[in-house]
Amino acid sequence: MAFGIQRVELQAWKKAVSEGEMAFLTHYWLDERFPGCNTVTKAGCADISKLVEWGKQYGLKREWIDMREDYPHFDLFGKHERDILLKEGLHNQLKRFNLL
Image 1 (cartoon, one colour):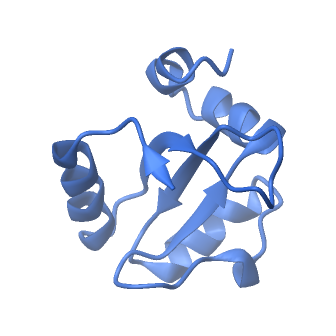
Image 2: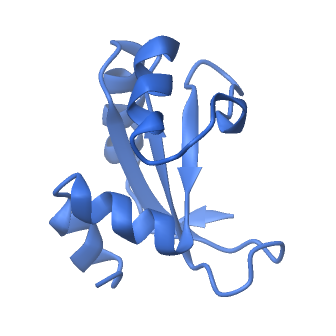
């Protein structure tokens, strides 16, 4: 279950992804399969080769891409989420979702 974002944020992420940009969307998230993880960041891009190359720098594998719908993305959570947000300079998301 996702919560903590506004519709306009989701729409902006979808637009950027569909235009072939690397886009990031962090939201609160609860899933009993991942205890201790309260957030997830979707790192997406419709240009699959660009998304794969971006993911390689963080050790992410092509087969981990969530291809559902029209918005291919990696789901980042836990330590990887925090580390990647830091390296990408997404400090607002880190602060907003208490990931620092």
